[in-house]
Image (cartoon, rainbow, N blue to C red; front, side):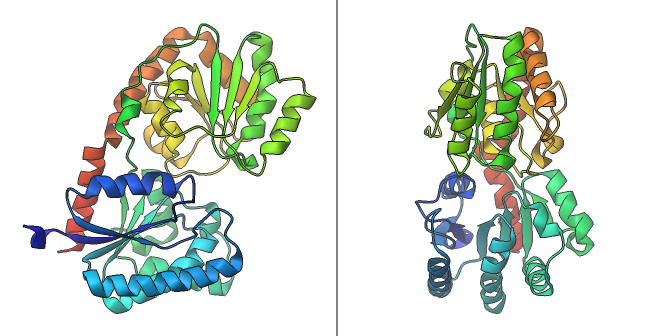
Length: 361
């Protein structure tokens, strides 16, 4: 019966915010609707360019609307998605305070916490951070490695931190691999230095010395986009490096199909980078740095080739190794399709339902 269904208030970001949480949380919410009574609430920026004044006024208005929703729906659980960086902690503390007073359990779903959250902070920031963690009913992380980071840093959180995943959309599993005749190396991410975009560009000449007909396709935009394009032009790499600023999430499948590998040389610890997860489902071999996600799920040569963070020489060597070995690429492709089955909608929804039921007991 409808009255027996768990009632969830589910937090999302504004419709003009792109990437990260805004890419994965609406799809999870839509998949949960068959299982729970769910209502969304916006708590967070409305666009990537929101000003500080607008943030302050906007979050205050969000809290008022949330209070109204709490009294109207009488939810069993609040599901709030966060990146758990300094800005998010400041934003989330008032929300936690309101929900604590209302006596409603909070699932704080963390999408790739930043290293700064575990580092030195001012006494005020430290108090806010610890208050948020202490007063959650459950903390969700995207990998076992990230869960261990939290429990090692805050031993009192053991038993409260659970690993929950993002869903890989079914279209990625249906991709039929057909490698191009000549090597194609794919990079997909926001264009910021710490995603490794320049590291890969600097690795390109060594790869091209071995495979002069290789193409590097960089997909994404961001603050470093202009500098990246200038670097390509100055170094005369325009014949082998192509930059597309934006491709629809599902349209990227065509590039997973024919690329010889995806390269993701990020400097961040990463919770569950969807570009890697989706490439796995599509059977595209992966070259990556050691992230929380990769260390939790991926084995060297079975699921990926590991390279050193911030090291173009290591990145080039990893790519060349994969391009030279057809059997290794095919093996990684097959293994990654099997691994990706752990992130289907049915399995992920069941994991969330188990958490919701335990919080509602």
